[in-house]
Length: 233
Image 1 (spheres, rainbow, N blue to C red):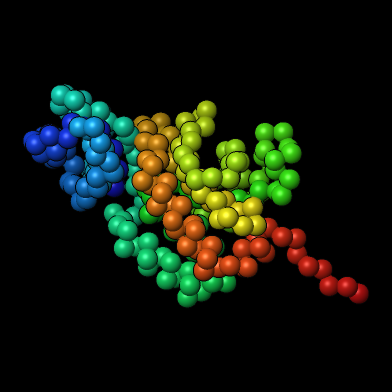
Image 2: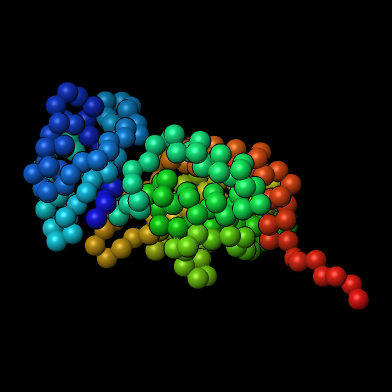
């Protein structure tokens, strides 16, 4: 299976090589490495690896923990092949080519781009600020792996951010800037694996995608979640 492994490590020569060797010795085949952050002598790296299904992840975690200064932030199952920012442009091209299905295209594609489990375009009521807790969001479109009904976090106030709910599910939230629409992306905790929270670079990437789609789709977004028009007699 394909796994995403997020590691915080000292930003010094040789440490990345130690992590890579440990992954290899544990049985992981590295297919991509993405540097999410380099700050204050520390780095945060995402490794996408092919992991033998019969092998126990505990062996991998123990090996990484033995490297001085290395911390494993999360190990979780990734969907599809490793992704790059070039695929963001391809997704936007698909949205522009078929705007009638543009929102559904975005919602269905984002989990694969961010190694997440599911995504939902939620519609927040106009009077959310006056409601207790600012909630009441409804579902405009859900990706195919989303639970029914989706377990939505508190999405208001509407601004791009990451959050973790009490059940351990990590969320990234990005508003469209119109029609009360907000995109919610989730990574769920499993019995054997623990996903990492969404990094600020991932939230920024999601926010940019959502803003670009809002420009492309324009007034079409105002119809999401609106009650159907009933023809008169």
